[in-house]
Length: 361
Image 1 (cartoon, rainbow, N blue to C red):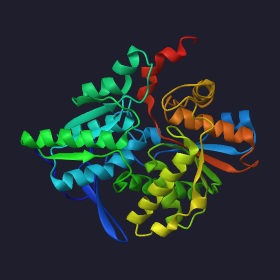
Image 2 (image 1 turned 120 degrees about the horizontal axis):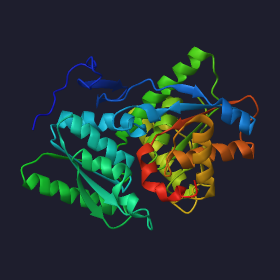
Image 3 (image 1 turned 180 degrees about the vertical axis):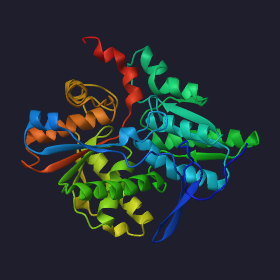
């Protein structure tokens, strides 16, 4: 199976990724395959600002990164796929929840590069209806030709990674060259580099508009996005606070996760000391019953985002984070006239797997 060789970072006229680019940092070199359509827009949310009062609200539209419905995973996986191409792998193996956005984008990148993709689904979200297992990201994975596997646990990251290694062993035995993208936080967070890049983009957009950013609100789960944003800001001397809205774990456990991943991301820049404990802001007030499980706050957030700003947020990540944004403003976390940026991480396809939530519409 053909694997493209490293060349320059230019993009072909049709927007297809043409090469792998090198990104140099102070103590290392990381390759990436460029798929994301960037810069993504930074837009005002005037209707939500008027509705809630207080700060001026903005949204960084990382739901518009392109490639199979886009989202934050496009920026992240560019760096993993840079490593994949560099190592000459022909099969990508990864894991995630049944409606994993990460798995969808991994399969899309593999498809574009002519690689095989094997996806393991973990049972993280009990009690869902048939649409959850057939629609949304699951349907897209099948359309893109990914081979699907089942893992019976939902909160066993090390066990899930061990199962990936077993799949990789099978691929090797069949003559393939596998590359595993693991789940547990025991590996360098290459994906966080995508959000170091995003910080440069966001700060430049704000500078061009004469906009001072007072706070950033983002979902926090695996912490690659959250940790990358923190590392990027602190590396550029910015003290902007980043509020992580918990989507998978309670705040105490998530705080440790973010601290570890942010320091590891800063370590990729050669500056692990950039991140202190006081940099970590996490809040689980909008986690609800748990990962991928809805509650009234989520339902209100999905309707407000769509009905006021035509923003489509998902029930797992961006929807809960938007609920957190609304809740923080109502709580008085931000002053009047401050500028608060919500990072929209996408996840749109998963919305269609939760159609049963909206029967009352």
